[in-house]
Image (cartoon, rainbow, N blue to C red; front, side, top):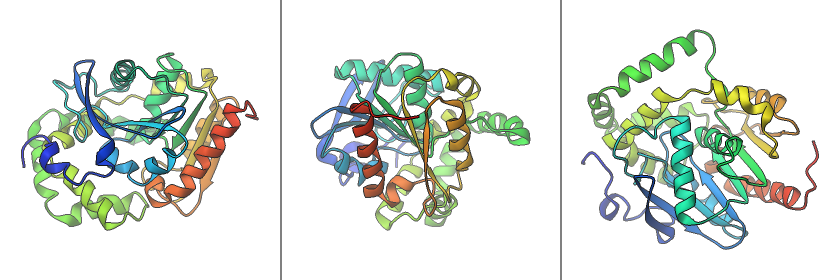
Length: 297
């Protein structure tokens, strides 16, 4: 397999393929899925994932929304020329360029893990003005203690050479590696999802983007700005999340005026893949609240 995923080959059975299109914006060639009609819902996946992560949730949300879900820069089928977009400010600017090119104004925005951080950054910077934000196991708090001092330098070291990504992609030929990573999230992912994550993990370009994103990620400024977020925020936390501890959603709630947490105790980091109908129900209920201005702190 080459350095990048090829749509004609690797996307032949991509979930919701009929909704896919390719758009150039901000110097990036984007893969975007666009499905449904109604208020625009911008949907952003997390680090190392792609639009396949929404395979069961997006069609449910599309019953009431026009869902716009891109592969983030360097991830999946979205091609980048360099790594300049693989930071929190860079990602926010890149997604803003995409939204402008599509000519849409998101009424609601929902993100998983790092995707939630991107959407909150965009809202704080007035790049988008949604009526509400949904964070699904959002990665919104910086690493603390020893992890904070060691993780970023190690990630930068690993991301500094394409050899690391090639080695990881080669090792991912062993299905046990991908299965072990997915199990560590605390979620049970069905075989179809596992195969799609494996397809991504075996691709050096995708792996490099994920590593570079982690290396360049700095959540300190975002956390400091959370008290200034005036947009209603719903934080969905998986009680068994092995990637982002559910306590982080409660910490974010305490920083954002009027924010609310729903903790789904039996679900892990990929809660939206485990129980898409339940997540869709929470999003729909939240939308009815914010659209009807019934939000209560």
